[in-house]
Length: 163
Image (cartoon, rainbow, N blue to C red):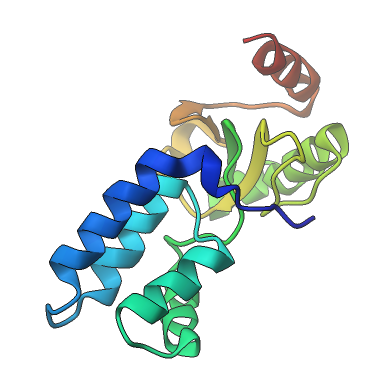
């Protein structure tokens, strides 16, 4: 699924971003802070913003993509309103985390690393969250839920849709 970046939806963010680039463009190493700012403002790095960064920093688009794809903190698809992260650390994996990923995928009709077309949900595979004693752990919008079970998936999605 490809998401279309609607500039009208981000008018204020674009103004702030343009100002930020102007302040940083002559600084050594400006690319990383500019990418981070874009990710924070837009929630992801749309192709149009990558191209704008390249133009305004006088860099090849390939260089900007190269840096952005190297670091796991950057994403090229918008994150859903509800971010569902399933820990795949050893303890969680052994306790059935992979089955949880499949259950969320089946319930939402998307794969891990994707966002639903309505931008309500994203499924994210994460590494150890450091809560091994309550494995498997699912993190929903920054809240860790331990001892998560497959039978909880439908109820969780229903509750999140109701908010």
